[in-house]
Amino acid sequence: MNAERVVRRGVLAIAFAGLLAGGAYAQRQDPSSRQQDIKDDKKDIRNDKRDLAKDRADRNADQRDINKDKRDLAADRKDRNQDQRDINHDRRDLNKDRADRNKDQRDINNDKTQLARDVNKYGANSSQAQADRKDLHADRVDRNKDQKDINHDRKDLAKDRADRNADQRDINKDKGDLHADRVDRNKDQKDIHKDKKDLHKDRKDLRHDRRGR
View 1 (cartoon, rainbow, N blue to C red):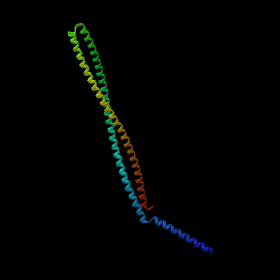
View 2: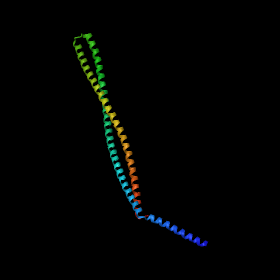
View 3: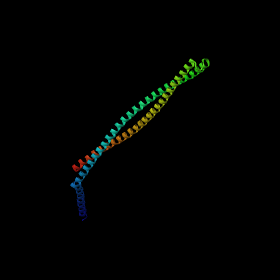
C-alpha cells in the first residue's frame, strides 16, 4: 500500500512538472506576446532614429556656430591689430608734434630775447626790431599749429585706444562663444554615440524577438 502511494505521488509530481514546463513553453511561444515585443522594438527603433537625426542636426548646427565664431574671432583680432598699429602711429605723430611745439616755443623765447635786445640797442621801430617781431609772429603761428596737431593726435589716440579696447572685448566674447559652442558640439557628439548604441541594441532585440528566442 505504501509503495503504491509513493508511485502515485511520483506520477502526479512528474505530471505537474510537465504541465508547468508546457505552460512556460507555451508562454514563450505565445504569438500575441511575440508580436507585441516586435511592435515595441520597432517603436524603439523609430524613436532611436529620431533622436539620432535630431542630435546630428544639433551637432551640425553647433559646428556651424563654431566655424562662425572662428571667423568672428579672426576678424576681431585683425581689427584689434590694426587699431594697435594706429595707436603706435598716433604715438609717433604725437611725439613728433610735441618735439616741434617745444622747438617752436624755444624759438619764441629766443625771438623775445632778441627783440628786447634789439629794441634796447636800435630802438622799438628799428628794422632789426621789426624783423624780430616778424620772426616772433611766425614762430607763434608754428607753435599754435603744432599745438593743434597735438590736440588732434590726442583725440586720434584716444579713439584708437577705445576701438582697440572694444575689439579686445569682442575677442574675449568670441572666445567665450567658441568655448560654449565646442562644449555643446561635444555633448551632441556623445549623444550621437549613445543613440547609435541604443539603435544597435534595439535592432538586436528585434531580431531576437522575430526568431522567437
